Amino acid sequence: MARIVLGTVAGIVVAFATVFAIDLAGHQIYPLPSDLNLDDYEAVGAYVEARPAGATAFVLLGWLLGAADGGLVAALTSRRAWTVWPVAGAVAATGIVAVLMIPHPAFMQIATVVVPLLGGFVASLIARRVLRDGG
Image 1 (spheres, rainbow, N blue to C red):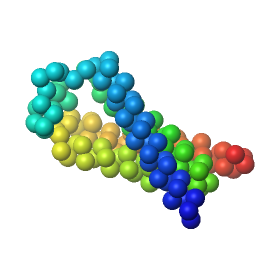
Image 2 (tube, rainbow, N blue to C red):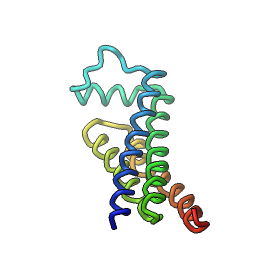
Image 3 (cartoon, one colour):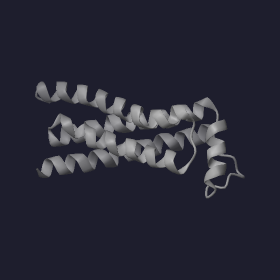
């Protein structure tokens, strides 16, 4: 049981570190406007609607890779492939909170759930294979 808890917590930490790192990389390439008030959710929502497609791609990539690598860490640490799902769920839940707080286009509202689950699915496939093969 301790391995399952440790693996899940480690996976969530890795997932959020990955999302954060990819977001930082995205902001290096697509910096936020200097006059954007991050406390004004309507202004942030207007920026989200108008930001370059590449900036949105970094967000989606962060969710995908965060759920995938965090899920793999959880599964390989716990030795249970199903532990990818709490990690993917945590990434999705964080995205859901973001789209509830800040206006987002409809496709991003859908992607906030679909993309982390896709990352979890990929991690689950890899984890099952590695765990089955004795890794």
